Image 1 (cartoon, rainbow, N blue to C red):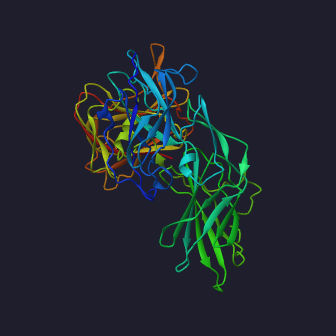
Image 2 (cartoon, rainbow, N blue to C red):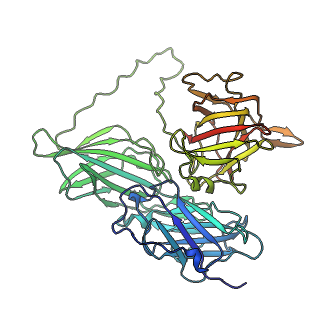
Image 3 (tube, rainbow, N blue to C red):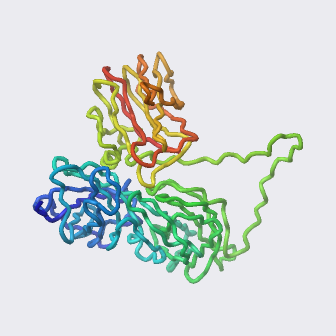
Amino acid sequence: MTKLGTLLFASTLLFSSCQRSGGCGCEVDDPYAKGKGDLKVSSNIVQPGTRVAGEVWEASDAIGIFALNEGQALGATNYATNAKYTTASAGNSVAFTSVADGINLPSTGNIDLVAYYPYKEGVTTELAFDASDQSKPALIDLLYSNNQKGLNKQNEKANLVFSHALTLVEFNITTEEGLAINDGTIALKDALIDGKMALATGAITTGTKTATPSVKVKSVGTNKYKGMMILPPQALAGKEVTFTLDGKTHTAPLKIAQTQSGLKYTVEATYKKDKNQEETKLVIVEGATISPWKEGGNNGDVIVIGGEEAPVVPPTPQPEPNPGADTEPQPEPQPSEAKPLFPGANFDDFEAFKASLNDHGLNALASQVDGGKTGKALHITGKPKGNDYIFNTTAQAGGPTSGKTISFYLKGTSKKSISMNVITTDNTTFAYNLDAVGEKGHVVGPDDGNIVLQPNAPKESKGKKIPANSYTQGGIDTKGQWIKITLNIEGKSLATTGDLFAFKVGGKVDVDLMIDDFTIE
């Protein structure tokens, strides 16, 4: 087979703020117009603004791509191994071209793709990293993609969806009015900084090397400053963080528990003068927020450090022990925060959503529309020939593996009800069936609130276990309102490979439904 040369990687990346200086005002040529290859690859990182500080691609950024014969595991017999592709220019929309011979689609059969960033020569099955130097965060912001399957001569367009492999710790500092930070650093003592990423799965193994990584404090607005640190997953509770602000040092322990891949953990801090207006103190409000990196855990209570002595906070009163009680008093449950169930789960980033689907793709009855619960939504309209899958998402590297509930919003009408599938690690498919909504089922009032569904275990049919989906006659009518549907998944370990979640509608009837905001918590 003649080598055609270059595999082209066209990337449309959306970033929210604080782009790298310089930018790119130039136009990028259409790489497909130059006849450089037959495999066409586009990409987006999961959700807008997910690279550190909303950075764009820089000139000479490089990724590595592995091509595998369909269904083959990454290893010693790849179709192509660690092919290097590099940007010619900087910007949000850029083209990646190969340095040497590119990868061509096979004349027969299909291939799957695995890609990672940043490129490293000689990589075969795993990528080693060291996060001790935080001066160029993009170079340690490991990205991973394995969503693209089944490419061939007739299906040459791929859309790689990248997700983060490490952890982001973001320190946000708010200063008192009239108090500026001209020079500042943040250092984390004895942090684990090395490890390896398995290229077959994107899984991170944290190493044993420790250091005190340091990041600069940058102004991001009036009285607002930020420092961001990328680290492998680890327990940060008790680790000492030091803020050096205009020559004054303030130290406190973190209370963040075990961090996870792809999650962002936020520490809020307030920098102010003390009552004598001579010294300064730092008030750290430790907590976690939902972010484009997905939300992390809870970092604990408020810590006051530096300046005048921190006030003593009296302990929270506890109930007196009851000798006759069978059990000890239990702590109040802490609220959790919802995160997207799959890429593009609010349907605003439609390409990310479609790239998360299995080989069957999106049903022709479904399309992206305006007017969602928030932003855009998925609209399902028409008359399906049977009890049809509308979509089936696949498990993503760094995606959710457990939770208590899956929720989404529903609006519209259907002559039959709907059903959802949740797949677990042992490849068991649990069905969640929504009974009729409206006059003949769940009553929709002025404020319907939430309909909670319980799982139905698979049923036996001819010696096989099949999902217990059902589609109730009487259908759905939400009376023009958005209603919330919640699936109870407590105690289930979600699939980490293959199919994860499916949405189905009843067949041979008119359907006009909108769905939006699929989350897990």
